[in-house]
Image 1 (spheres, helix red, strand yellow):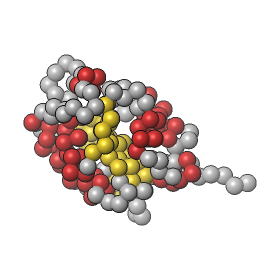
Image 2 (cartoon, helix red, strand yellow):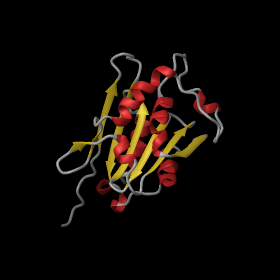
Image 3 (cartoon, one colour):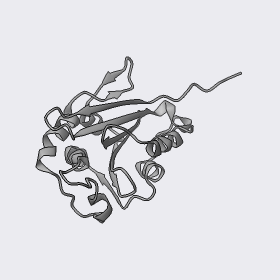
Length: 176
């Protein structure tokens, strides 16, 4: 009997020690864990992860730190209210205190990515590679930055825990 190997993903969370309310969580889904070991187009992933998004924009790698900073909650009771009100193509507001942490996350080698052996690479190093697409998604739930690369998919959200709804959608991506 020929069994398919189990799907696997890697996740990590980074905390800002200077601003404890700020954190980013990452999930890296290797291509081998996806259906047919094929990384779908960014728009397909967006449709599976957040089909009701009111804001979806493909961004250039140079905008990655700003996109990450836009995910971080401002000092307001409802941190993601912008996600429900900003129409596509409209600039988003970034809190000045979020930029430093977002730049650190974009350029540090903290998130794990599948390699041999398992190693870390910065999001920016991955984002400038061939075949990479980056998208900012908001409005249907938790705002996300999605990065699709030939080696897999990176999901990033501000927060400590990826909730059960997002976990279910990740399960759909890997065919579980």
